[in-house]
Image 1 (cartoon, helix red, strand yellow):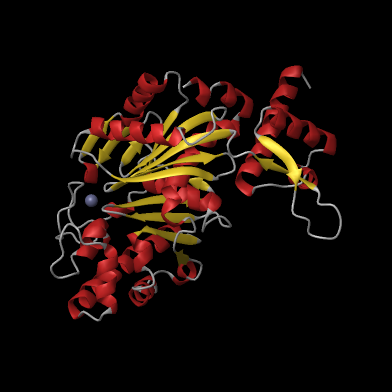
Image 2 (image 1 turned 90 degrees about the vertical axis):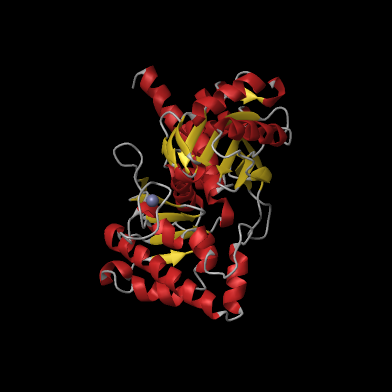
Length: 402
Ligand SMILES: [Zn+2]
């Protein structure tokens, strides 16, 4: 083997070990030997290199039997961090996520956008970034930023092509945010913008309800309804990366106008507004919990409205079962609160899908709670580090320098 290819093998092995620690948590050196198929001394060298970079530490693990606990290799959450945002129509949630996936700090604020002004969004994200970065040690390395937005995104350049519920068309969010970061912080690592449901799907696939399977659909139930599809362990993108917009499947050709410009899209009958409208006398301030409370109280109009929402939800899910034959469909956002309430309607409608496929599907709530998109945003920012650890560290920013 040439020196160059040996170097390449070593870099790949280093990434393999770091990914395993990041996704699966602390393990012993013996487990790393078994997992990687490498010999013990090679694994020892790789662990030493990661430890020298400060990314991992060897510490006594929990002892399962009598005797001395063996050493485990663990990621050091505060050594390398990402900044992650879930930018929703109504709220913005931000977090610092450490290597290994631990959420070290978070802020959660109402979205202060002044309607269509993306610059206001940038300012809010910068303010939240300040607050979040203040919460981590100065020697932490900031390896990247990930932002989930409810819209159609060109992830290759951070361009938000269309975000109907934000009234955004062709907003270069990635470029604007990177510029804002540079003005405030100087030299900063890469910024990644992704579709909220794509990020949610990926997070639920690697760390959540779809972790054990290869075909996962995540549906984000917010004001809009987004979709992310993981097929055979890969996020489905489509020709331009815009695929998976299942919220805009037309289910009612003569239905309500949708913010996307079409009519009778799935989101017009199962989105947040459709649910809120089930409650007589609803206002802008009405939330999903109030609708569910009224349902439990036996309000007949709420029951009739929710029955209809449940039917629509089941019809769409049945179509997805037929098209994708998923192992798991994860209902995020307000849809997770509806799942137990509308189970009969969902079961009845999904029951009309092709039997072989419907017998394989599990329709569940997110294992990551409300954090699926946030966690996915963090993972998008960790990707370069997990691909090429040493090179990515050289391109990251020490917080002490900011
Ligand atoms: Zn639509």
